[in-house]
Image 1 (tube, rainbow, N blue to C red):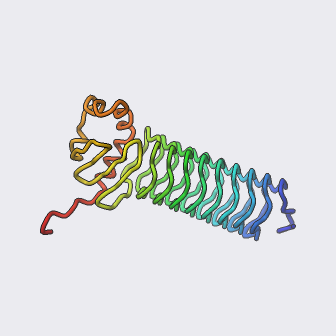
Image 2 (cartoon, helix red, strand yellow; image 1 turned 180 degrees about the vertical axis):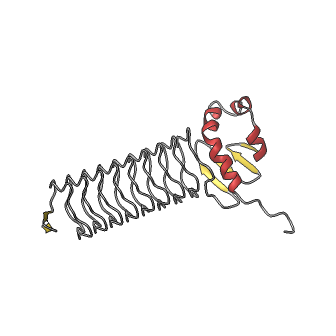
Image 3 (tube, rainbow, N blue to C red; image 1 turned 60 degrees about the vertical axis):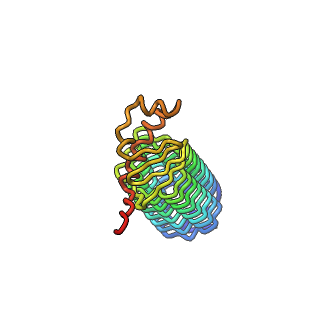
Length: 257
């Protein structure tokens, strides 16, 4: 199969190839070298790109719905505004890739390497991000509603404006997170972590501990440590998220309002 004069097949050498807007639906491209290739606006839905090298490739506005990108190399790739809904990116290498405003809804990103990636304003609704490495990633204004973020590494990540409603955050590593104001614009938030957190504007329940938001804000390390053997370590990592969520929650209207 030839497209734009290039032989399209598994393991082909397509470095620097000009495949802008090429029609490559369901193409067999596993193990292909596409480093620095121009795939701007290309149609790659359903394509087999397992283990392909797409590092530094131009994938802006590419259509990659349901594509198989397991173990693919996408380091430093420009993937802005690409359509990756339902794509399989398990164990893919995406460090420093630009995925801003990309559609990754329902995508499979478990164990993907997204260190330093730009996912600002990306659509990650219902995405599977279990065990993904998101250290220093930019997730500002990202839509993470209902995303599976269990055991994700978020050290140094930027989450200002991110929408985490109904996301599963159990086992998340939040050390050094830059959360700013996450978007949780409701009266009650439930976060799943080591303990169930029921968060309101004025009151917060974490496990069996129920206190006012002000009390949680001002608890000393000694007071937190007495709550459970592992409470202090957890609280130091989760306090920014919990307190930011409480500030975002709307207060319950007073009786008569």
